[in-house]
Image 1: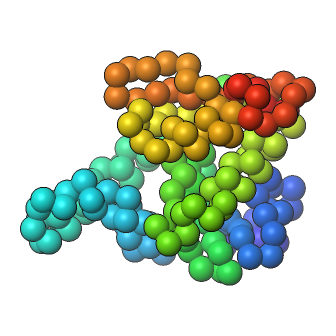
Image 2: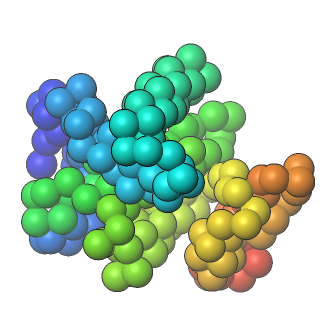
Image 3: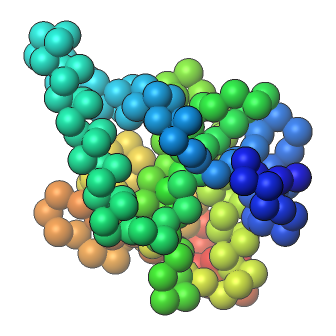
Length: 182
């Protein structure tokens, strides 16, 4: 198995997700899909705007997000989630100082609540545990995603009023045991 650049994916935690689910490195060719995905997440926040204003604002915010990732996370691994070889989501991962930071995981609405996100996270958790690495992420504290991460075993480490820093540390115990990775 290889990515679009011809690099071997053997041994990558995500090279063994199964026959219908896969990840690959994102490229510029994915920008239209990634914008569509971004809109599926943020569009409701701006439902009060007219269609033209909403589209323009979403374009500006998407461009700002991409610039933020480039400026603040140049080492980030940008992955496209595939189901039956079609793009359905994205993951953005940053490895720093012996830990993994999950910058983003997102799926198109029609692919949510089917266990895909859980499967991706469980594979990531297992791979990082094998390396002895912690996993950290930030999540909007009013988001339904907080419960998703808690079910996986992440615990809140900091609350800045709007966002939670959630983390999971390596241990010899199992997934879902209060912030410990096995």
